[in-house]
Image 1 (tube, rainbow, N blue to C red):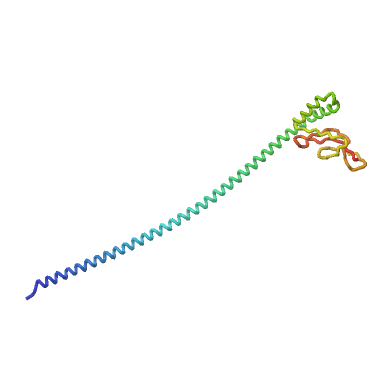
Image 2: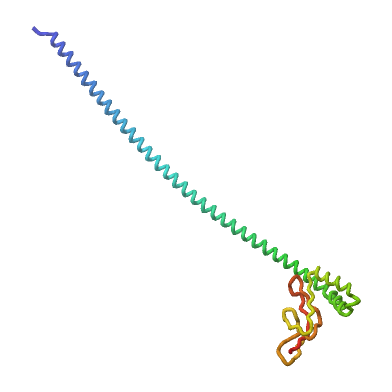
Amino acid sequence: MFNMDGMGAKGGFGAAQKKIKKNEVEMQGRGEKMQSGTMETGNANANANANGALALQKKLKETEETLAITTAKVEEMTADAQRARADLENYRKQVEKRLEKAEKDERDKTVIKILPLVDDMGRAIETYPDELSALKKNFQKILEKLELVRIVPEVGTEFDPEIHNAISVEDGDGEKEVIAETLQAGYMYEGEMLRPAMVRVKKI
């Protein structure tokens, strides 16, 4: 007699085994998918990190290049500014020198114009020293105020071409040249020769 209960039990056991195996296969598939997903995520993160590092290096290099260019421009501009300042300072000094020379030339011209009057006063004082003794003091003060130094070499003074203008030379026994006569006084103005004294020279 056929045992239906036994067949049913066996059939139920086999179905259970198939279901367990199916679950195991599904779980294994899920595990593999999860592992694959994890690997893909890890690879994606690694690629992202690598790309980020490359981008950072590129940005850093660009920044360094920009900094180098900017530094060079700043140095060039600084050098230009220093040259311009030096040129301006030189120009200022040149202008000051030209102005000083122009002013001195004008003063020299003015003083030269009054020299004939000064000569006349000097000759008058030398001719009448007693009568014009008071004028002599005032005359000397005027010369000092004008920064004029009167040059009247005495007879026998050694001839100096820097301050004497010889209009004639008298031969003598020796070669030494001395002042024989002063024809016109000379003048120094502000420490420089304005007009040398006009003299006659003789050799002794």
